[in-house]
Amino acid sequence: MKGESYFKTLSFQVQYIIDWFLVAKKPIVLIFLRLRRGLSYVDAWLLLDISFGKTIYSHCRFY
Image (cartoon, rainbow, N blue to C red; front, side):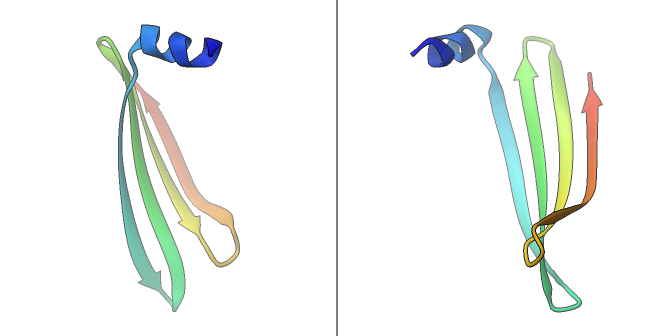
């Protein structure tokens, strides 16, 4: 497929960490995502409330 070859050419490296928290008896998920391309990379943090399906906190940083 076209999209697959495109991502192979860019050679992204994805690292992610998922942690589960039980805060006030609600399932909370913390997701850390790092996209790397050459010397530049993007860090993103997402704090999700699974029970309501909404984002509590999100942050993104470019290097």
